[in-house]
Image (cartoon, rainbow, N blue to C red; front, side, top):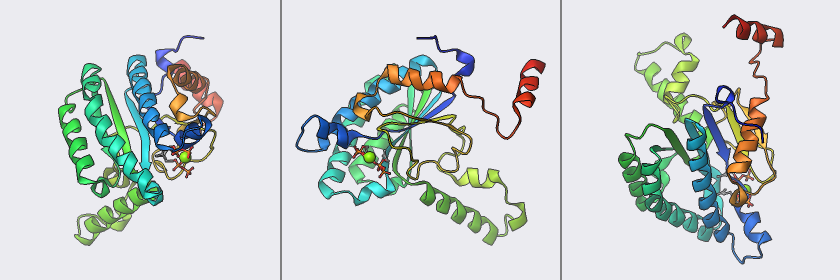
Length: 250
Ligand code: IPE
Ligand code: IPE
Ligand code: MG
């Protein structure tokens, strides 16, 4: 495999970790839950690999707003897995100097989850090698509505005029305020959709879809995605010639 060059690495990688249920079915398991449990191991491998490779921000879609509508037994199991993994992963996060962060409607999580999450975030708050953000009870449309409400309140209070509203005001009220936008979005399991994930933030992200089911995802798959990213020309509306001249002027 060609070596990954540091100049062409994304700063921020976002992953839609999909396919746990299909993985469990393929293994002939009676429930989807085991797929979610093994999915945690894939997240551990991917997090360590991303930090070692030099990714600064890794954001993973762990539970969507829409996932609350799944059968209660599955939702309960996912919350249980979340609590137990947060506790178990703390030493690895500390050892690898990774800060844990979370985005989403976190208040809708069970109290035990929120407590464990807040504790793990506080204990890793000073780590600065990579930020691992869990998107939990996350939906991009809800996030945008939340931002619109924040802006509307500023307008109602007379702090901001409607014609002064800019992208930066929206960004200020997003859960991701202060984070760079993802450069690369990876979705596993062969689905080619975004499923209400970071719609504002991925405006210019490169998309990478792989048929690999999330519990099977490992460092080699991450490196394949990063290599593909390295071959993309991110024009952002410019022509290829304009980009070449900016590169040669540097
Ligand atoms: C992703 O795997 C995990 C969550 C959405 C919580 P799925 O549970 O969606 O697995 P599939 O897509 O049914 O295989
Ligand atoms: C997206 O996966 C959400 C997460 C990975 C947490 P889903 O399995 O819920 O998405 P859809 O329903 O296939 O779009
Ligand atoms: Mg799915």
